[in-house]
Structures are given as C-alpha cells and as structure tokens.
Length: 177
Image 1 (cartoon, rainbow, N blue to C red):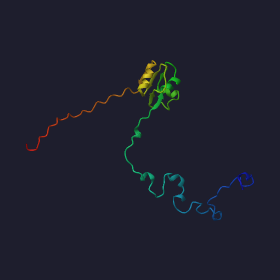
Image 2 (cartoon, rainbow, N blue to C red):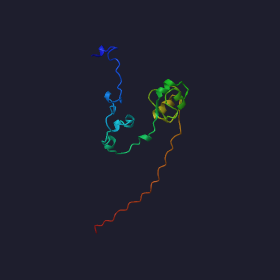
Image 3 (tube, rainbow, N blue to C red):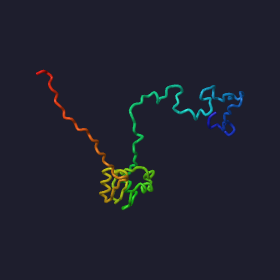
Image 4 (tube, rainbow, N blue to C red):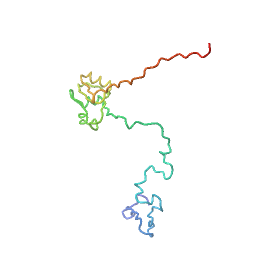
C-alpha cells in the first residue's frame, strides 16, 4: 500500500495503542514499560534529566574544572549608537532612559545605557546615559548637544599607601682581603 492509496475506508485514521488492558491485548501487565528500573516508574519522563547517563560518570563530572569565571558579575550595557539618536529623536529633544524606553530602544528603564559613536549626528540633543564612548561624547558636543552621566562620574580611588622602601645596603665582601 502506498501513501496515495490511503482512502477514508483503509487506514486513514490509525487507532491508538490501548495499553494495560489485559494479556490478550499484547500490551497488558507492564504496559510496554518492561520490568523494574526508572523507565517502569510513574513520572519517569519528567524526573530524569536530559543529561542523565545511567550509571556512567556524567560528562560534567568527567571533565576537569580549572580557573575562575567572573561572567556572572559583569555589568551589561544596552549599546545605543548616535545614528539611532539621529533617526529617532528631533532636534533639541532630551534623550534619557525613559525616552529611550518610549522609543523602544531599551527593554526597560533600569538597563544601563552606553552611547556609542557609530554613525553621524547633526541634531542638538541633551543626552543622559550611564556611559559614553569618547568619540560619541565628541560627536554629541560638536553637534551642540550635551552629555550627562547618570550616577555621576566615577571617583578616582586613592592609591594605597606603599611602605617606604628601605635603602639597600651593600654586602661586605667575605673574601678575606
């Protein structure tokens, strides 16, 4: 029988497999799950992780672990190019996290924003952001706009007091002369 030969009368709708309905069905008793083991237990499909390897040592435990990763603590900025500011904002407008959210350029107001210099800017804008690249700041200010940092400028950390170095003494020559 070929696929194009299937008619409403012959096998168009396959009957579902009725399991656990006695020995005469061929799918009784263990209902196709076999004897013992996790696969025979209820809830098996939800309780076994996709990474489960039976009794074999799991991959994550087999590979050596070295070093340290600080990626969890990185601060991620929403990058906004001056070309976007040129297209989305009018001359003289104020650009802030709230207006960027209103224009759909950042996912939410609390996202830190960094203004980058890709593109050209001819409009006078008052831009407020968490960070600016030097080139972006130069482009905004050359167009007659202003740049304001949110949270103020970072304070310079005072250098730790270094202990005064002791003058080195020349060693006496022990050659006996």
